[in-house]
Image 1: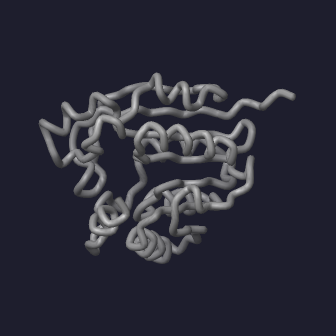
Image 2: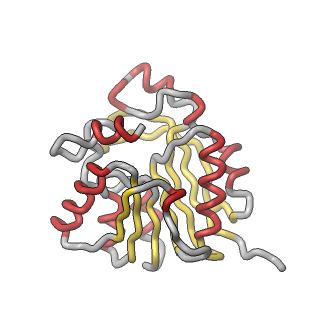
Image 3: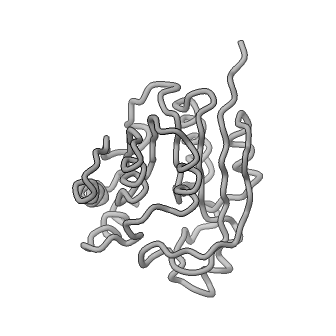
Length: 207
């Protein structure tokens, strides 16, 4: 997969654009700046946007080419990112460190997804917010109609609301919905898509 993403990000253009994901932007604008983590952040569009609002931004991705483009975008927009190359297993962030975690089109098969979501939850402070947008299990219908809309080809890497509710069962869910949206994100997220959108805040642990 690392080779796939390095190839995807090889062009000089930003394949998912330079503008933030609209749902991420909508929710983030309602929150007070603090520390935010963006896993699998790719070319940096969401990280750079968050930094422009005054957030202390941490991000990672295992693609070296993604990192270079993200840092170039940060320089262009005159913002600072704490961006690392690697996977979640290689990150050493403390528990309860982040005020927000943004999971924007971060797709993994079920065992990795569950493990990652559990690990990320530990890194989020109590009452911290999680913002998620990802392709749903109904998305292949829209891929067949329009290949340019993008998304994983494997059903095991697509999500549904039941799975997300279970993964984040210790969250207050302000929103968890499956929606049909029109994407305009670079050249690889273009057209009608079926997505899961979630905004939740982590509950205080008892005891």
